[in-house]
Image (tube, rainbow, N blue to C red; front, side, top):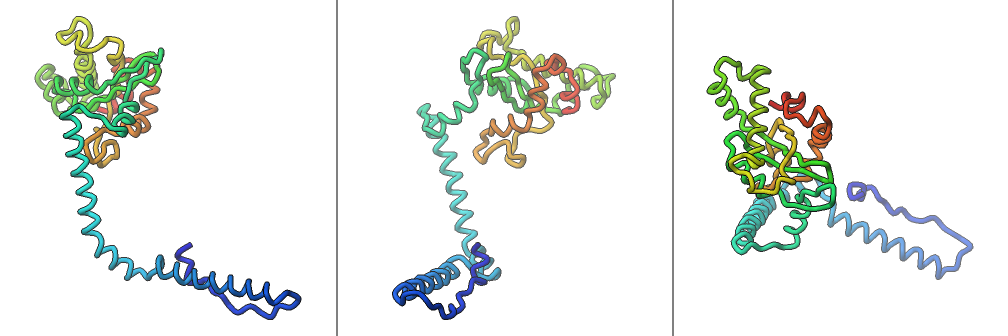
Length: 253
């Protein structure tokens, strides 16, 4: 609409008869007011390309500085909140979005399980758990492919790390790592068994700012992750997909 402003013209109205002069004067004044208003709009919002580019070049440094200041403030604000274990309204929204919700409606925050899993396992680079009133929890895992390759070379030296047999061994290793908190393992009892993942979706790429799955403060955007991998998660609730050795997980390696 702004782009069309210069083409709006207000030519003279032809002679109109049969109307009271007071009404004609009122219409004429309204029309003149509209013309003046459009000139103001044109001056406020319309300019040629070169003028707009020059203004953008002039304001860019200030806008970049303001953006960086905002990001720096957010990082420091988050750090201060963590010191005092504080939450604000935005945090409560994020907490609600990342809760696991069982079939019975019970809720559980998976963040500590995810962080512990990544910190304890050299084969898992990133992990995110999902359960939205489903029969069991899914672990979305982005593996450390270099570490898995070294594992194959060390444990199964006769296998080609890029071959199908090696990939099956890699998936089995990932499953062993994800199950480290299960009953009978060294770290059993750290977390409620009910919320531990029963199946695994191996992801082809990690969560980064570049692919839109992580924000500028290194927080995973869980909603976008779920949206991107919804088909793979649906598959994980099938008998074939529940097994860690499945076609989708193999292709992700």
